[in-house]
Image (tube, rainbow, N blue to C red; front, side, top):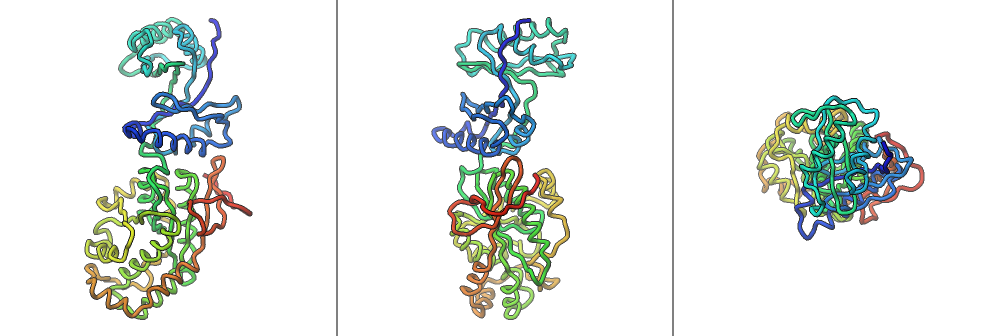
Length: 421
């Protein structure tokens, strides 16, 4: 058999982006930028826009398995495949497919063709029959249209043809960066990382705010927050985590506020501090992992009392989910094992066994009148620690950062600490 030129590449297909009408180029451009970012240093020479898809042009020394692993974590992708390029000549296509199949063992197959180039002289069924017959003659495998061991996927474009054998599902959603920036109140628990991911999947860049009660409580919650942000950075390539000391603020609240109202007051102060930080970081909304009725602070009345002090929208993507649904998503996401490491959450500090489940907002206002709200907010902001996370070559590096930025993640400098992904 005559050898024909076969060039490996990665074909990336999208779905929801294709429905964006006149805004589609912006979404596709962002997806291409994200693919370049996640595959940097792995042998991707170019990310090229084709009709309804993107192509990653690979260098001869490309690390294909690493590229596959990184592309699988890029949001906005319907499916992708290691594919091969060849000419539009049917004979070249037939020979290239059989050449690429050399060494593969399969007893049955089918051919599935899509024509983005409708002017091609053969229809999709005609291509299927011609290519299928050629493969059958060359390999001896049987055609099975119902349950084949191998599916040969062919795509006909105006300038070239592509074929692949193993298409992988993507994560779907929208590319990170097309929907603005949000600030997520990240605890060390199960819920908030899932909430953050759901906003990532809707195209948001997420910055993370973690309130802790060190030194009254241990550093475990901070360590968990760092681990969670490290994992979530693999979906958005750069992140910013702000660690906010809350123990001193809690102590002042405890001195003035009856025990049943403390949790709601804690949350109100967290929202006040979070929205100041969000404004500095260019975030347009806050995100929490609250689910209606899950705990005492998440009754409808208490959620309304907490939201009363917010000047930014508070997004609650888990609001209608039950705990098992959230746990299932956390396990699929990979955050569950981090979240269940025992720690002491700052919201449980100085809290009674029976907190108020229907806080009266006039009562809360009277209680807060005894507190110096602006000073406490400034105290939380001034003592906050900022950490930047950046993904490079499949690993996430952490460095100390600053609030003086208009873009999450930043460019880490100086000594960095590598985290394996």
